[in-house]
Image (cartoon, rainbow, N blue to C red; front, side, top):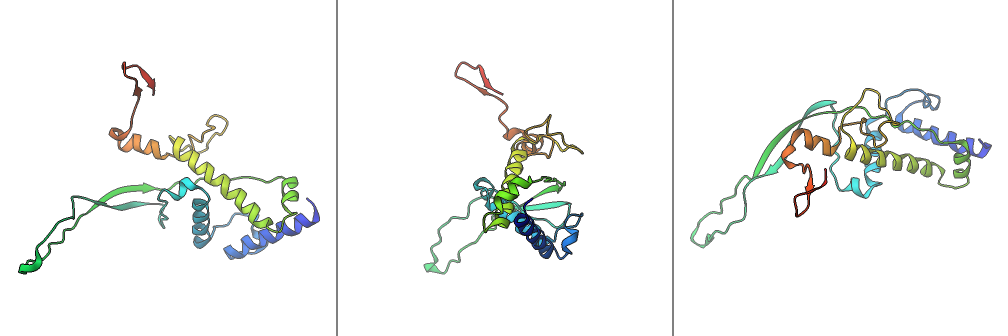
Length: 197
């Protein structure tokens, strides 16, 4: 690593330490990321992907719990002739839906080669480039696990599960498990032959 790169990289590590309220020397050790930093990272990750901006990612404070969704039932549109003193009649259209959740840890372990850091160190926005590269890969992996995940292994195996099938239970698998009637199992053509399963 070139000296200029080392200087910029150390400044990056110092910034990570500052954001998390720890000593710069502790960045290379295990530490708990501050909740506000976690939320900022999640927001940045979501904003880095057009797809992720279109779905709900709701932060929770507990690893396990119950989420309460507010749905709607029935209609609320009506007409009332109020000229004769008749009051309009509002209607409660909300429907509370309960669903349990359990958060599991997903690790985003990586390294960046010295020659890549040396290349990025030529630019004034070095820290931004490092952060953006990390965020982009995390976003892509989150989407990949979201669509392809079928289970969470204690120790995942990327060589056997290149689509991250064993990192987490993904969105589609959650539907298969909890709402199978909403899942299309196979596609058939006009003659009734299966074209896709």
